[in-house]
Image 1: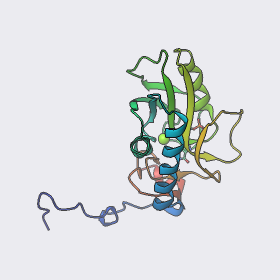
Image 2: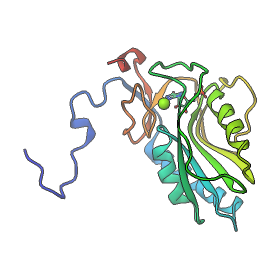
Image 3: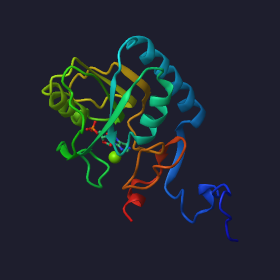
Length: 197
Ligand code: IMP
Ligand code: MG
């Protein structure tokens, strides 16, 4: 069958192996939608009269960032950084490398870091120190997911979407070795070894 321009794309499930390795749902698409709207409303109230700069941490936060930005009723600006802390393993290395730096000048800005998931917290504590050194007026973090009991040092997370058990999860931007970011819910990765293709 050939697709005509304008046809809706076929569901991802129809692609061979599109969901291989995908386990049970941890946070459903509906729960994500509701929580992101609620976070947007709280952020809108907290930053009233200001124009926060949302700093998304690529790649995992791209989908959350896109939905969150639309849920904030303020003149936000967006910028992105890319950091690498994992390589292709599913456990943290503790080594954070800046792959793409920010374009924006942070001096005097109200910066809100938008993160996909906090596991050990090493990535975020590194980023917080790095961004604070650039003289923002304020710096806060909005993390969609926090893995319970994994943080090695206390972190100041002002906004949290969901606290989840310490399992490796995929979907809604989060990957296993670059796969499964396009799932619309957060799932457990059924078999972490299956991500090594
Ligand atoms: P941390 O430095 O251990 O807190 O790890 C944070 C980064 O590792 C996140 O921004 C993610 O990119 C990645 N990460 C941690 N846990 C998961 C997971 O369960 N699924 C996908 N990526 C994860
Ligand atoms: Mg990742």
